[in-house]
Image (cartoon, rainbow, N blue to C red):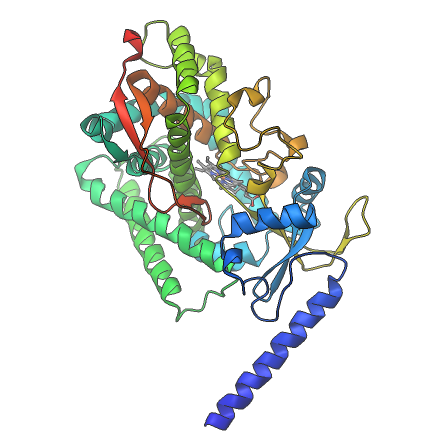
Length: 475
Ligand code: HEM
């Protein structure tokens, strides 16, 4: 028995070494930190802190280098021009195993994880729900939901350190529920399920992130995979109930995402709703958290936001679409938050055919994985002056939500750009405006967020701030 085990282990180690050497030879032109078979760069503890490790490598090895996530080599590209050509070329680059095997455990074959024609059809079918006109229609609802959440969660927690994470998570889920499914998650009968979804999405993002970064296959016997499986079943049970109710004529809506999907492919409706729920909820919620955190440490910027809101609203409380379009400074604050706290820190792509990198002697071989560290590019000294300083004015006169030349692509680039970007920005501006109308945000001097890269950027210990009443009408 032991002899048998010994032979199996030896044969596996031999195979692993052969695979490692094969990749090493194929990718010999790419510089990068020292790697060993099986563990790659993960033999050192600091490589598990992926963001700071990749940043350190960028400084040491330049804008293109090799990072080994265990046995898997990843070609890291931080050069904006090359990143743009990779993300816009869907013929040569597609979503690889990180998406199709790992993300897809939760997202199924939905919009984030599908490739080719399946992706095109899904995007065509869902895009119309995310255009500006549609979002404009929901502004009023988002304002009301935000005010209701402020009453429920913030008003009782003034003048003391307070973790604001739940506020943003519950609020963004409620908005998603109304927007996509016409469900009111604030109703008593839905509160428990909303709380469960909230927890599942947060934990799920963290677990999938770990599988991707450490290149751990989704073996069904792993504890993390069992947990994920349970979460997916929970969410599917809820989606089933929602579909049943809709078919019975409850929560009826003339034209929402559920209506669009409900009579199509039976599996697809689960995949797409799970995808939108997971991709749209955690991202927007943590984005709100980081914005408030940054503001708590930047009182002068709060003064400028309050000034803009006072001038735009001119004595009114309720924000309209027209007001929102005029809130230029708030938009700059939002973009600067997305730069400093890049909600989707990494994007990967699989190369379908050998790809020569322009102006270099490097070729990305067919089937290799490319890692694009948006988070590192967003603080790269070669792209930004004082990259670690919170300075919203750097986004003055920026049209749209990206600066492709600097590699500032918080919502991705090309065909696979985030479908929910306009909705996310609308939510953020309403949340920001509503909080700033009522409060001054102060820092909790004992608090420092412990940030890790899941699918999105997660703060493991929440986000603590102190809220003090400061009505905009009274300053
Ligand atoms: C601050 C909030 C958000 C950020 C920073 C963000 C960021 C991103 C990024 C970077 C991508 C591209 C991923 C890639 O190329 O591999 C993406 C894709 C996507 N996002 Fe978002 N997102 C946000 C909010 C939302 C919302 C609110 C929704 C929907 C309700 C959403 C749904 C999606 C979907 C479906 C895709 C895949 C699009 C495709 O492949 O065609 N996201 N997002």
